[in-house]
Amino acid sequence: MHLIWDWNGTLFDDLHIVVDAVNASLAAIASGMTIDADDYRDHYQRPVRAFYDAMLERPITNDEWATINVSFHDAYMNLVPLAEPTSDAVGATKEVVRRGLTQSILSMWSHELLGPTVERYGLSGAMLAVRGSDEARGEPKADLLRRHLAELSINGDRRVVMVGDTFDDAAAASAVGIVCVLYDGGSHHREDLERTGVPVASSLVEAVEIAGNL
Image (cartoon, rainbow, N blue to C red):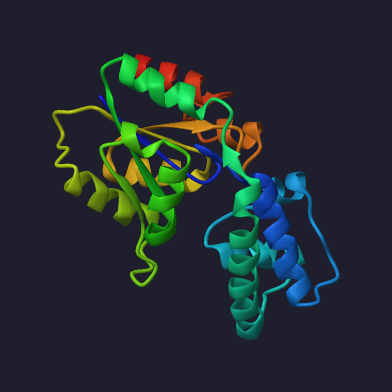
């Protein structure tokens, strides 16, 4: 079996800095509002522009969207040093190795930034590959997942499980015909994740256990 980890919100516990970066972007458009983690989970969706529409209860303008993109990215990058891997990320990736399985990381975060960050936290050595998004392509996660599987030369005779924290992860896995386990420490409330019908784990170690039993 091969396990594909999502990074942001799954292996990397960054929800608190994401919320702070969203608040910076809301301030940049003078929205007059701030959110907390529960607000974020109440509204989070992709495409991200729809997330801002939902929070503000109106369509944002093109100029606002451009400002949001720049301000969020700048704030998030400044805050990255304040985030760390999820508390059991190392234990979970070691458990994958102990079981004799293989693993990789697939993220919608910039590939250029992802690799050095994973390396800095000492997680890259356990991975067959670490793949982020080529932002110029603007491709959905399902397409990125297809490319990732092709690059790993994984075909239908090898079981693959994806572990992520969002509806988008579950949808991408379904689109390419693999199964998914969702971790409830990221972008959505557990009860919302459970409504997808996908197995939900309270920890990353539990996610590995569920994946092994699927």
